[in-house]
Image (cartoon, rainbow, N blue to C red; front, side, top):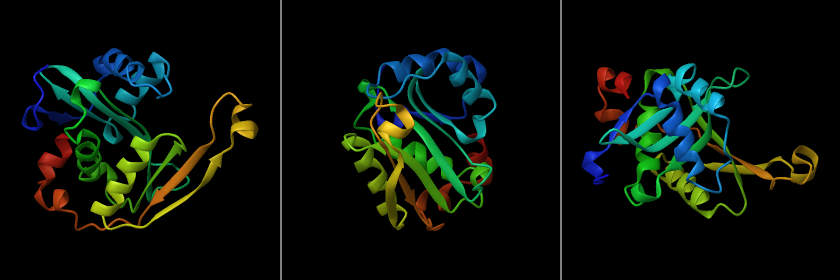
Length: 182
């Protein structure tokens, strides 16, 4: 894979991406490995709210997420995976910005996610997103290790970023046709 920032194509996932998404996530510890079926559903039923970064036909980045039915003004970002060979290209930031340029996220005012305390890379990435979008960040424990995971998983802390400024430069550059293709 010849990786440069210019060689990356951002696009919606399709059903045949499922196996590559599953392999990418498995190669990005400490991410939780979902079932292949879960990833397939994300690539199909949630394609409008997920994104792939592709280089020469190989998936180098992935974000999954959705608009919670009980909080449609929010986008819950479930998982971010970037191949080790693609790190340093700001793929997670580029994918998040491209997602927020999509019509499927029109009206979203907050990004919500959960992170374990020890995942320094994710904390830094989401704080960077908040700075770029000029948005405040709130955090609180959402899922407790003992109560929700029977001690088998670290506690998950929820970040709620927003309200988001709709003046982010990526939105100004994205035409409606381009945003729909992402």
